[in-house]
Amino acid sequence: MRVIRAAVLEALARAAEAGEGDEGAVRRLRVDPVLAGAARRRLRAAVLEALIQAPVSDGAELCQRAYLVLAGQPAFSHEAGEPLAARFLAARAAAGPAPRVSYLATVAVAVAGLALAGLLGLALWRAAYPGPKDAWHRRSPTPSGAYASGGAPAQVTPAVATLFQRHLVAFLLRLDRLSATAASGNPDGLAVVDAQVGLAASEVEVQCATALAEPVCARLIEVMSAARVVAGQGGDAAEHSFLDAVGRLDDQLAAAGLAVYVDGDVISTGESGRRYVILYSYAVDAVHLYQSGEHRVRALWLRRLDRLNFEQAAAGFVRPNLREALVLLDQTEDELVHLILPALAAGGVVLLSGREDAQYPGRAALEQLAGETLRREWSAALGPEAAGAARLGERLVRREAILDGVSESLRARGLVFARPTGLRMPDGWFDDLAQAVLRDTLDQLKDLDVELCSEAAAASFSAARALLAATIEIHEVEHRLDYAVHGRRMPAELEAIVGPVLFEGRERGGAAAARDEMSAYLAQLARTPSLVGTNLVLMSRFLQNRDFWGGAECHAALVIFSGLARELSLPDEKLIVQHFVDRAAAARTLSALLARPPAQVAAAAARLWAHLYGEPLAQGVSGAGGR
Image (cartoon, rainbow, N blue to C red):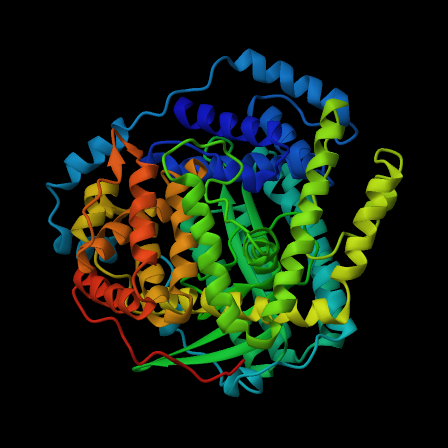
């Protein structure tokens, strides 16, 4: 659809102009909620195509290349810097003014949905479109080691690391050529490329035989076979078999007690029929066990093992085919560095609207209150490490101010740079910018980097990371419990915003995602009263930052904030005015919620969850893994 293509082009352009990468483009995507899922898939496909043509792309250049790809122009691997920027600007100018977001599709869906018989439709849909089975209903071997009792699995051996970092990646790169050839409709070329994929798979099998036990290797071979079918032939059944094979591989890895985890995904482009088959490899840092009634959930803290140039955007996720709740430590650390720790510095604020110059009454006071809330809760939760975390925040604020100056200086010369995302500056960063940045500036950054890599800094950072990862874990555990019951019902309050969860017999991804996020965020508030203010502040970003508007988290936050205000007898604010979030009203609601005792808000969240989903929120969810 033209409207989707135009919206994706605009998001990529805005991210490129802001010096951001593909995650920034996702945040800046503005489109009718009904079309949001298709738009995100279109954006991801353009980014992947750009990465294939130029694998080393990153940041703003990646968005520029993806823009050109979607605009029908090639993204040459040898082209970078000013020539690439010039072609991007020319294509941007030729595209004309940004499209206006229309909500006609949402209105049409909502009107049509009112005529559906919800329960009957759900039953018919499950019968006609069963989809991939949830992992709860898949038999698995008995887990061992940390997967059975909690704790930290044994570290990944060099042979295992080589298998997943080198040999499996080589297989995936050949597999992508197979998918591209299949989409081109060249049967002769397909046979040649498939033979090359077979050779790469054989190399993985040989390496696997020396690194892993036979049952694990057998499951890995099944994953590769299923992936070849998806890349070469496609189809829903093939994709479901592939995802199920990935889940069975993880079950076998848990049975062997190995500190490795694999996630799989398939991204399809509607126009070309191209399929991207992806396998993410992770090292398992820790395993925590939760029990809720008959359901036991393993929560894993993961760190990326392979070095493929694409990744999950969120700090945690679940999938129906995977039985675990997953926390991604790399993304968790990024959120800690850029959002949490700077707020712990004396006088720190939380930029709830991001870098947008949003003007609404009470913004400055709200962001100051958000910072005070985080300092109060994290000081109590971190105990002896609180002072060290505050010092980390002060150093990071100084580093960001210096990097802002570097960015402005380079932008004036028509240059952009990859902004560091972690606690430490990346290897080689100082050498790469030695000719472009003043020595005094680099010296200041080097001095800060020395402080940030000290043992004291590492201890404070580790404590803060564990605290943030733990609350993300609670969120993802609720997602996994919701999957176990095939998803919760669609609350009327949310349906009034996003429309019905079913349309023409199929589940609408955007509506279902909003329903699921609302459940997980309320459970997170109810089960972690010590950080209830922090989680309210983080959730408010979805209302105060327009880059999140129209997304599942924004829709969930609208219902949660209004519902909590009602549960606590707070003033009834109208959070939506003429299809847009009234940020001043949302600010007043957040301020009122933060003024209430955390235990009251947590109890109100549990009551609201029960009201929305028609049953009590399980209070017996307990972690047995320890931290």
